[in-house]
Image 1 (cartoon, rainbow, N blue to C red):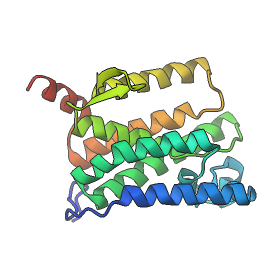
Image 2: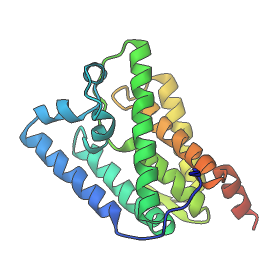
Image 3: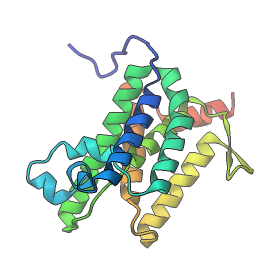
Length: 209
């Protein structure tokens, strides 16, 4: 009987670099052929028409240079360390599971609220990767804006709280805050179900060790 906590054999193959490369390639192709965005981004109406692949491909589309730059920087900075720690197979399972589920959650919200939008970006999965980094390396110090030193868990929880506020207030309406929060939430569930560990406990235990 297969166990959800059965571990993969450890291996490391720099998958983060391939993910970054694919994202950059797709972004370049989007600029060459704008119609590609409509085939790959997550569009509720298209999903209802049977374009189920968009639950995966939306993670590789982006809405502008700033969008892809920040996502890819975060993926490279945090993802490289997470992949080294848990192995490439586990990292890819985590990345795609959280990203796809964040897309499914967003689609459900859009469907029940009657909202038809275009969802682009790896942000849901990247938020999950940041959570994983904070849980695996809770003593790590990150410099926000290059000047403010914060422990990784404090930074990630702070950004998540900000996403909650922005989602409630409706600020930056063109940003999918709920998708970011969904990625964070599904990342948390992944740790509980797959690893049998609570990220909150990982944050606190290390602080007092």
